[in-house]
Length: 210
Image (cartoon, rainbow, N blue to C red):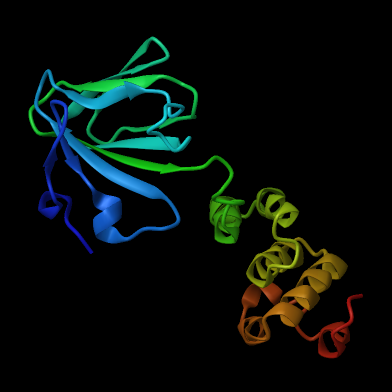
């Protein structure tokens, strides 16, 4: 754990560089910080294609102060809290517009992060589930099956949405896959009211989908 104010400070070309990746030891992504006062260059102009770059897709997070970014010639005002994603090959740079402006830069090779995490799909579906729009919840969460066809927690959530709509066979199919890939899901189902209509189906006891 590291507070950014406690990070090492190395003077750069008008800015202060904070070598966060070195201090934190991250290996799944690059991360560094830059600090400058008003009028100073806080992010040098570059396109991630130069000899010193890694060809990263980068996300810039303004954590303090404010900055004015230039992205392929377009001016972008970036107050604290701004998140800006820029692909490799696109020229970008930023000037601090307030003293003490600090920008966090997180980067990685495009595609290296892999697919969206499974939980994101059922989190995105949650508002529809809570409103009783189970069909829409199912539509949203089912998109995760493309990358996670056998993920037990995702299948379990889909079973709940199907059961709540009265789609018995579909719910049992999802549960069968969930049970096979994580036996704990059987315990979850034992007291889950969403699955009341299918919980005691013989197909679930034998592990065969209907």
